[in-house]
Image (cartoon, rainbow, N blue to C red; front, side, top):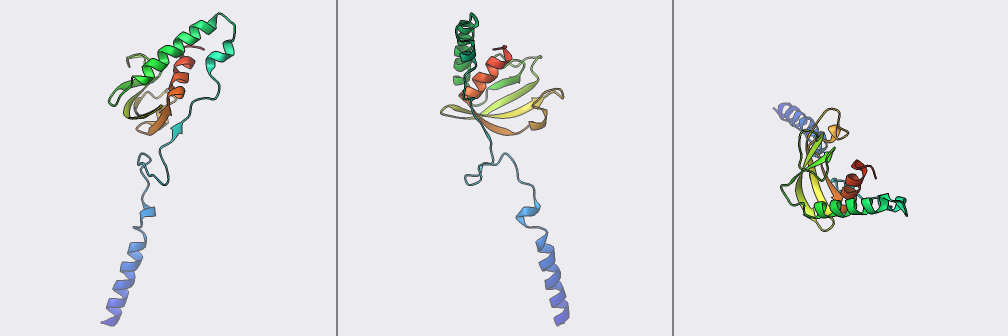
Length: 147
């Protein structure tokens, strides 16, 4: 009888080893204050419009930067945005990657990539969350317009 209990206890102990927390894959969208698993996309250090210095494109670039800044600042929770081929416009047929605003903070927007096309550079990050600084989204707008 003792052997039955001892073997049963040993099997129960061994079975418990495989069900530890490490046996399961972490959800990359869980926000953990200690680990900080949600990435933050920082704004570039150098503004794209500064490279045009005295050229005729400088005024156009400044105007585009102003429009992008206004668009980004007006985003609120629930808004859908296009991350590729159309940031700043309503997500239409040409949009390769759509995202939704799921949270906002001062100078930051948290986006979740919702749907992507296979030829999109965002294809491998579908359903992932990330915080984007305002300057990073403005830079995306300027890059799509060729500045």
